[in-house]
Image 1: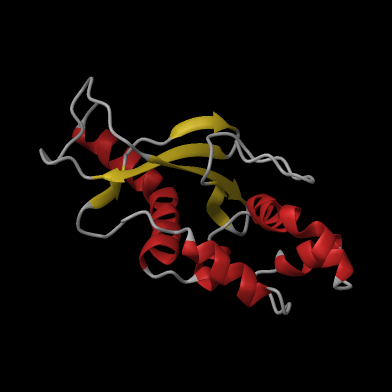
Image 2: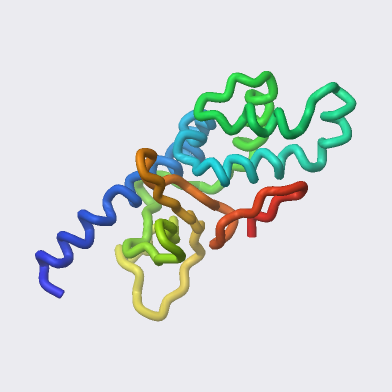
Length: 172
């Protein structure tokens, strides 16, 4: 592959890499759930909310909420539901990956999983500056999906396959 081919490949990867990093920055660095949500695919949003609500279903119903209505309200780009601040706060408590812009990065060359779905890996930058052939590194998967008009968004940050909604949802 020539240098021009490399340049073209990196340019083609720029949108997915930028959007994955925007999610990582919003979630793990800035702890900003509103920005995180904008970087998250609607299917992941649904499963994320269902995961949070599942152990609370009885209490939710006892408090007069319809779980499906709550899920639909929280799926919005800018949720205004009264449970949003509670959801956001509880999710950010678990956002303890020590990501920072100096020592973390994204592995280049996303892995195609399906049409418009690719897997990226967020990882601490190796001391040598580059991943060495045959070496293994602990990574954080970021499954990304492309949607016309919306661009690339995180489809799963727990596993390497698309999540499945339900009560309970499946993330891995």
